[in-house]
Length: 197
View (cartoon, rainbow, N blue to C red):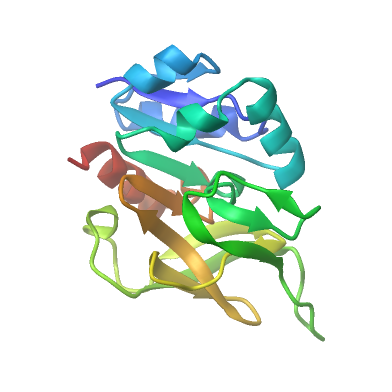
């Protein structure tokens, strides 16, 4: 199996690579559209701002390439957010694969934004990406913007308000958290992604 990690300019690449190698995968970090199209699996990571990430994907001429991928694709953290239509973070147009707009999380007394640390998720539908996970598994989150809950939501999380934690649109999956930093549950989710047919 070939696995491409898209060079989206994020800083979490090495931890994603190490997590996948522990599962026996041999990922290739690339910005080459031909390599990405030919891969059996594709991961779109991301840390930072939506505007900078979309500018990088545009500069690399990868926007249309990503939109047209037919193999399983997993967006991680900002990579998941980029799958949506738009982000309030700088009023940025994203990839437009999943309907919806990313919104700034609302702060409140005693509620820290960014949402940073461990939190549980709740499945709202059955999906191969969730196979073997415990009820309400814990994952590690770091984000200030969140995706709306909608028809594409697989699992939700709550931090002051409910939001989409795992999403799917056809062959495109997204995880708002960092599975590569989420111990056994994160490793299981990544393994499930590698096994999706």
